[in-house]
Length: 248
Image (tube, rainbow, N blue to C red; front, side, top):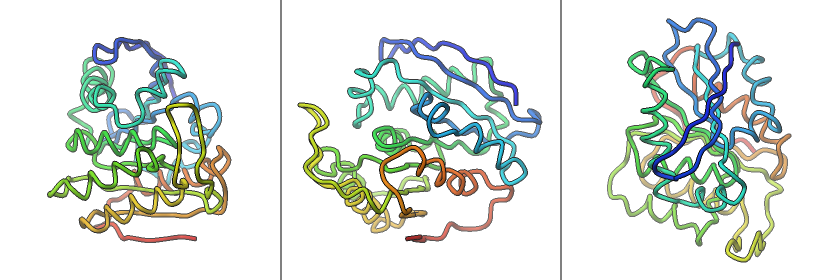
């Protein structure tokens, strides 16, 4: 898999970050694009590149793009439902990729993936830019943020946007009243936040794949669940409909 790294200076965010682009084996046949937020974490700690290699022959030929954080401090600011970050991902990034790196006219399905805080951000991008990505992978998404605000926003939308969701979370992610920093206090547990978001989506008729894995808020657990998430997101064939399921 050929890979190259570039730098993208965002007008929306007024900062710069690395973007890794992984070419599919058969560029002319690739009709899928998977964008990973938290690019460093997915590459270096989740082991996403190894998962992708493992799934060769079980997924459609796809472009894989990894988006780094500008800085740890920027991640705290940009990930919790921040409109400029949604504009960067849902508009600026895709335009930039299509300007000379990926033939977007061949892309039939776009997938956005994130974990923890970027799992929340990925779902917010779907709300703000509902035509930019058709599928969202949120691994242990931080839907606890702001008293589960995003779940209530989806309930209030009044319309169903054309997006399908993969949500997973660990059965051990049960800690409450966690102070991550002075301006980030997690009142409800990770698992409760994800369940509330799942319920909000189901109440509005969304296609949701939901999985509770035996694990905690850690990279090893996300490595294991990413296998099934990618097989769902970019399957070799696209069967009619997406079932609601729970694997505990």
